[in-house]
Image (cartoon, rainbow, N blue to C red; front, side, top):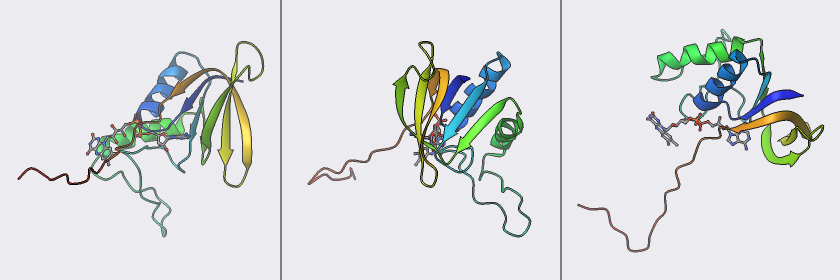
Length: 135
Ligand SMILES: Cc1cc2nc3c(=O)[nH]c(=O)nc-3n(C[C@H](O)[C@H](O)[C@H](O)COP(=O)(O)OP(=O)(O)OC[C@H]3O[C@@H](n4cnc5c(N)ncnc54)[C@H](O)[C@@H]3O)c2cc1C
């Protein structure tokens, strides 16, 4: 069982997981994307010839955070898994189960003592009939 489950591997989730590990928590980070970075640091695919990761566009400092996150042996990352629910009592009264789903591997539960949700936010543009942009 993990001490902390973090949903989201954007800058917030990566930072939280690293900080939690510094405080002795065994953290698992779940993200439905294939790599860490989230919305703002979303990374283009690796260079197909060299296999080396490309830097995040315009955010060179993000590379350090991503590298620390990816290379930290204290952290467990579950990429490609979507968190779809939270169930009480994952393995006992002091735990919860994060229900996760993967397109190929199906559904599972990840037991943790605590949950941190760092799933970011989406812009939701809403169109109004007859609306006009100010000139
Ligand atoms: C169109 C757009 C443009 C932006 N432009 C800028 C800009 O120019 N400059 C700037 O500073 N900020 C910009 N932002 C804001 C910036 O993206 C956010 O401030 C920042 O990404 C928030 O970081 P975060 O870690 O909180 O969340 P995110 O970076 O959003 O990370 C959340 C992570 O959670 C994962 N996730 C979500 N739901 C689930 C789930 N159910 N299961 C598993 N994983 C899940 C996502 O895959 C994602 O990786 C922009 C945002 C948008 C949408």
